Structures are given as structure tokens and as C-alpha cells.
Image 1 (cartoon, one colour):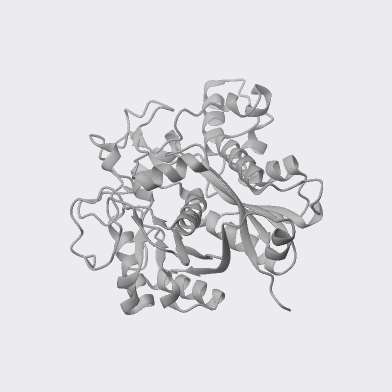
Image 2: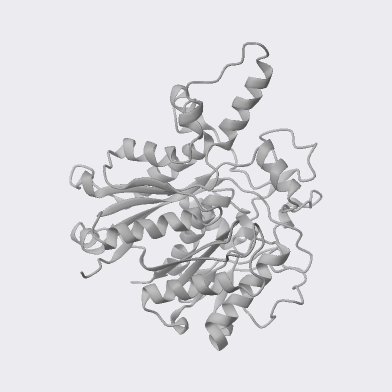
Length: 415
């Protein structure tokens, strides 16, 4: 069976550095940091007191009060990003086959804010504890996909992928496969997360995974820097409309890029640490290239996982050098987490968007907050430090790696 081609025809984003796609892209180009003191709750008791929150977020701008009470923040972000992507795609809902339109979403944690607040209310309840009837439907990680499908009456494949920080990339790969296998014509994919709350902050702090640079949050996420001390948590999400190429062409759709390959692998090594030799990262990149039937030399840009953790940054650069050989020095590389922070299960969505926009506009977003390069990292690699640069990009790779050793990568190509 001949596989169908898959293209990107719509994008939406709500992020720590922009609440719409144009705002997000403008901030990426200009090297804007989204890190600041936490506003959603009192973080003064924690070692880390900052994060990359969505700025000036008011649910009332998007939902009526009755609706917003039934939606965890992560589902709100999903619906907002999906709405922008659908508008951007210019899809006519009267003319599509709703049985072949689906939603495949990614979220590593789902409604942890809802879980935290409900548990607080239970403890306060004393002898008469109560739980909201919306507790479970707000919390479960598949519900965002359900809400999107109900809003647009998409009756095709509908589920959520969970693979920690690789969740959204896995969702994109699954959507890609369903379309190219002719199981769907249109899929809204991407991911969202809303984990900046007491439980998440406490948990990640106990793991010593987070930066504690409270005196200077904006420079706390500093991938590949000698003095990096952990990642910065972020909130938000992004949606991508994937569409079968002939279907998109027939309706005269705007096409951002073609999705040409997806790879998955496991480190099979450690609960939270990457394989020190980058074996899982190497394998997932190779799998993506094989799936796309591409040579390593065809890749121009890598949006790396680049979390600003001591071990992860080194392992990823080792993997890149193993896969790309001498071509590694011709690549443009950047970690947009230096600006957005780490959106956990949603990170693959916003970083896929960054890669797609880089292709469309021929601009490599920078890796900001570079002061002193880690001596364990090859200085000849081009990490696009501190300032964006112009370059024609025909092929872009986006990497995501999650706790548990889950790895996923996607390749986008200029049409």
C-alpha cells in the first residue's frame, strides 16, 4: 500500500512567551525569556520560586464561567490552541468528512491542578469531605482530546498519548501514521500542560531537577552552559492541523511544511537520567531519518530537547555527533527551552511549531542565556547562541526525551 503524504495546514499556540502563534514566533526570534516569579500560588516555601507561566491568562476571555469551571487549565490551553489552529487552517467544517477527522493529543500529566485543588478541599472538609462531580472528567489526561473532538464533531481517531516529555511528539507521530495509512484525512494534534502548581513544583524540587536561580529567573534556563543547574517548568500548549496532502491541495489550503518522518526509541537505562552515551537519542534520530528515507546530510536544523540539565544536554550532543558525523558541524542547533522553559508533555508541540516556523521563515531561533560553554560540550557545534540567524532550512528535526527513557523525534520538510 502506498503511504499518503502528510502536511501541516494550521497552527495554534499559547505559551509562556506568547498567547498566540504570531506572538510566540516574534518572541522566539527576539530571544525573549518567559521565566518569572510564580504568580499562581505562594511559592515562597519552595527552593524554586519561579517558572514560565502563560502570561496575563484570563479564562474569561475564552470561556464562559460555567464552561471554565468544568475545564482544567491544561484542557483550556488545548482548546485555545486548537481553536487558533482551526481558524488558521481555514477548514470548512461543512465540507469535510467528520468520520475521517480526528484528535490525537499529548499530555504528560493532565489535570494535576484539579487533582491538587480537590485534595485540598477534601482535607479541609473534615467530617463531611466532598468531591466535585467534575473532578474525574477535569483531571484525566485524555479529556482534552475529547473536548476538542466534541467542539468540532470530529468522529475519527481520538485519544491521548502519555510518554512524559515526549508525549506531544508521540501524539504527532501517531497522527502522522493514521493519516498516511488512510485511516484519517485531518487530525488536530499537539499537546498541552498546566503543571505549575504546588504538587509539581514540590515533586520536581525533591528530585533536584529544577533550577534554583531565584535571584535571576530569566537566565535560569541556560542549555549547554557550564553553570546550568536544572530545568525551568512551563505551562501552555500548541496545536497542529495535519492533513493528507491531496486533501489539502484540493481545497487550496495554505501549507506550512510536510511531515516526512517520525522516530521512537527507549533508553532502557534509568528512571530519570539519559543514557550517558546518548544511545537512546541516537537511535530515535536514526529511526526518524529511516522513516523519512533521508540521509543525515539532508537535515539543516535541529530543535534539540536541550532542557538545561547537567546530564541531558551532554548526552544529546553526543548522540548528534554519532548520527551526523562531520555534518554535525554544518547543522544549526537551538534549544528554545532557554526561552519557554520546559512544558513537560506539551514541549514537543511547541517545539515542533518552532521547527515548522523556522522552515517557513528561514530563521533559526536562538539558544539564549549562554555565558560560559560547558567544557564537556563540543565548541565547534553551532548552537545559535544568544541571537537568531537567517538560514534557508529545507529539513528540520525536533527531538524530545522523557523520564522513563521515552524518546521521540519528528522531521519536517519544506515544500
